[in-house]
Image 1 (cartoon, rainbow over the protein chains, first blue to last red):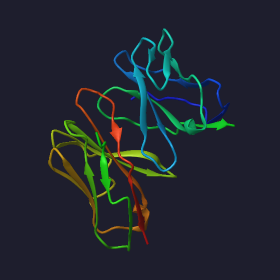
Image 2: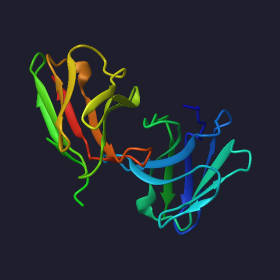
Image 3: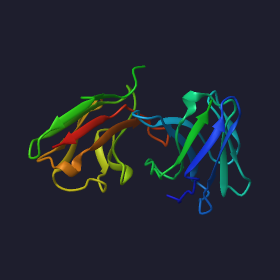
Length: 108
Length: 113
């Protein structure tokens, strides 16, 4: 699976949009971009995934650049409960390979 | 839907003892995954099954670890004998085949003293 690069940590004010970047410059044409998050002491939680087009669901939006070498996860109105480690994963087959992720802290 | 169910939630055992972790996947899911999480190594895939058949066990650390899936609704991960370095949180996840998202359980925190 293609390697991803994410910032180690980020802060965001409560109520503001949280924008989490991810670089995946070696992504192949058939590999999807997946985002998961892990809140302390819980299992990883699926957020969203996409191939080429931007995607939106009830949790977040995923913006993938046209060359697919990077993406951004957007939490539109961050709450304190969004404090977690966020993982960007490039997935080719059935396996998910987790990196170290971004620790997002929402500030009151 | 109850989600992926793991038991026990916590397990404390002494070195040398056998440990069995259990997982019930989401009904209708065909694929099951076992992960281990430690501070040093993060989340690592140990093994995964498709339709109850082990597909890739390259992440299983050594022969002390074994996993089975006797039917579509149950899987076990066994460590025999356990060692202190096996202390970690073990997660089970399931998905429909074809690359659909994995859904994780809340894990079993194993402590081997």
